[in-house]
Length: 323
Image 1 (cartoon, helix red, strand yellow):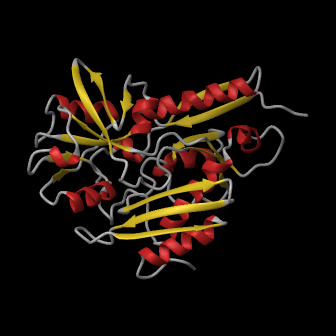
Image 2: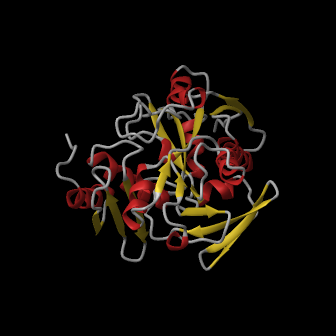
Image 3: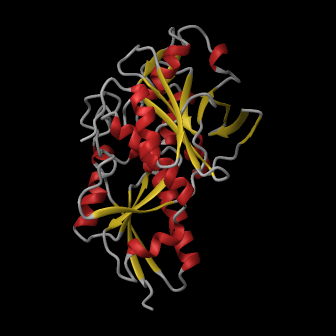
């Protein structure tokens, strides 16, 4: 049987993207002896234009961090692309496929501050750094007095804006994904929802936002390849890394996003879980159809991603984007 001997992997150049790619490379090399892997850094439009507003519902941000990687795949310049699944648009270009979804890391969001705060103890009119409509609307519903500042950049850049006040408005807190901090190797432990870590000489405090539903696909890494099925193709070879439970969950969450007609930056939180005992998928969703809206909540269980996502979408949406 023919075995793979060489792959070119495309990745963004951010610290988090490189960390995710290194983890994939390590896993592949552990599965295939003598496999040669080249990492190719590809600058995406989001990297080249950091001022593009990714937080606006009508933003030109669809595929902002993925399209150039997909173009390189289609051109045969790379064999696979590594993505944070939450950044990947619902529609995959013709000729490409999501060949493997890795086991999901934490999907939890974290409140990060210079003092050991939780949402309720932050000062009145605290300024929160986030570019996510989902995070903004969930927090606005809990604390209408909060001021939100859109914030771009990689994780260290965002942390510096908090620590060193490198921002037009001084930030009182940031919201970041736990999975990103863990993959970057920050040394922190969380006990009973609270924790801390040191960053460039300052102590930062963490608080799990367990009640905040994550973005669809948050915490999952996807490997995108060309649609090929030969024994040595990237699509077939990365199947050894695929986690079916994670794939079922994130597929359900992304279907909900699709049924509501939205993109990656929709004010939608979704979290699916698989109950292997009763063989059912359970999905929770929260949706804010416009800024300042009362949240719409939905929850359902079923046997297939399509069934569950459709039931929750019907609860959340006024009309569905199903052709």
